[in-house]
Length: 169
Image 1 (cartoon, rainbow, N blue to C red):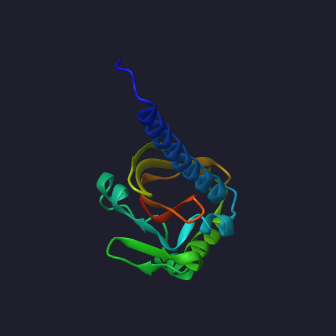
Image 2 (tube, one colour; image 1 turned 90 degrees about the vertical axis):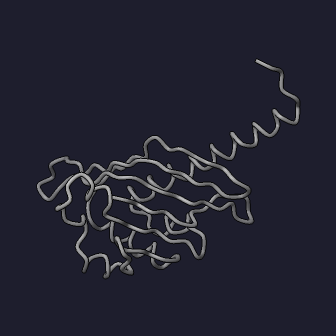
Image 3 (tube, rainbow, N blue to C red; image 1 turned 60 degrees about the vertical axis):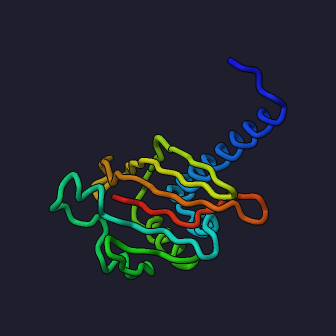
C-alpha cells in the first residue's frame, strides 16, 4: 500500500463522512415512515422534491400482480398518476402519502445494500427494501419489497435531502 498525502487523506475522510451522512438519511427516513411521523419525513425532501411509487419490481417477478395500493387510495393521498405509478410532490404531496401510510398498519421496513455515488453536492443511491408488518388478522407478513433509486442534494445548511426518491415495488 502506498502512503497517502495529507490532502489525499483529507479528501478520503470528507468522502467517507459524506457517505455516512447519506446512509444516516436513509435510516432516518425508514424510522420516520415506520413510526408514522409524516411531517418529519416530508422535511427530509427538498422543497421541490418528490417521492414516486412504481410497480416495476413486482411486475418483473409476477407480471399479473396488482399494484400494491389501490388507485383511489393513492389519489386520495395527493398522488399524481405517472406512466408507471404515482408521484407525490413537494412537502404537501410527500406528507399526504406518508400520513396515509401511518394510518394504514404497523410496519418495519429496512433499506438494504445501499450503493452510494457522490458528486459535487449531490449523491445518487440505489438500494433494496423490504417492509414487514401485520395484516388485518395481526399475522406478520411481507408487505412489500423492491428498490429505491434516490437523488440527494446537499442543501444550504449542509444537510442532505431527497431531491427524488423512486420506490419500485
